[in-house]
Structure formats: structure tokens, C-alpha cells
Image (tube, rainbow, N blue to C red):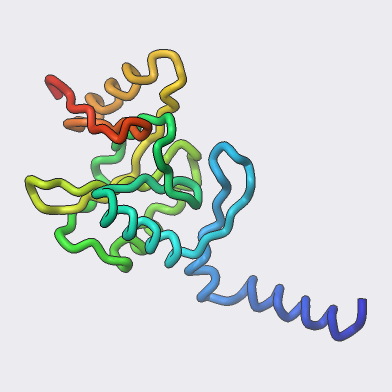
Length: 168
């Protein structure tokens, strides 16, 4: 390797390591079950969440990617972190991701969920728990979590269906 290439690589590494913009905007992620590391910027994550929420009236974002019709139940287990807004914006989502990054990084089964509530005409952002629907008693486990955290419902990602609790 030439001297010039070494200096260039060193400069890039130093810039990357000490750049406050990069430190603020990079979210290092890994696919929850694929094992492949993914790096996505805070802005890209917020844009993906915003677009999915507008298109589908909700989204589930986990470890650098939006989840589609995958075999999970989704339930909010941090009601104190819930944010309600009538006008969802990139800034609101980016702040939410940044504020909850440590928690989300601590457990790969946690995700950011959004959903549109027709009644209040508001969008909710939550940190949600993913429960693998292929596990024995997964639906019962999810329903127990929903009751414990005083939720009215949980969501079946594969069926794209809200499941309301009879007696929350």
C-alpha cells in the first residue's frame, strides 16, 4: 500500500470516528434473524417509517429494516414511551429513534411501532415487543403482555390484523 493510500484511509477513519454529524446520524443495526450487519442513517430510518405509516397506517421497524407480513405478534410494553401526534414528521420520528436507541439496541426483539388511530385521528409511536408467533403459546404470551401493560390490543403482523382484548 502506498503512503498516500495509507494517509487517505487514516484521514477517513479519523473523520468517521470523530465527526459529530456521523455520531449523531448513524444508527448501527443488525438484522434480527439474518445476522447480517446493516448500517442505516437516522434520516433513512425515519423516512422509511414515515412512508410506511402513510401507506399502511402503521409500521414496525426493527434492527434497520421495516417488517412486513412476518410471523410476529407486536405489543407495546413501554406505555410511558408512547408518543401521540396528529402530524407525524421526519423530525418527530428521528428524535424518537434517537431518544430510544439504547433501549432498542439492548434487545433485538424490541422495535419501533407506529399506528394510525382513526378515532383520535392521531399517529402513535411506541417501543414494541416482537413475539415470534411460531413459538408455543405465542398468542397467549402476547395477550398476557398486552394486559400487563394495559393495552387495548396487539397486532398480528402476518395477518395484518389488530387483535382487540375482550376485557383489557
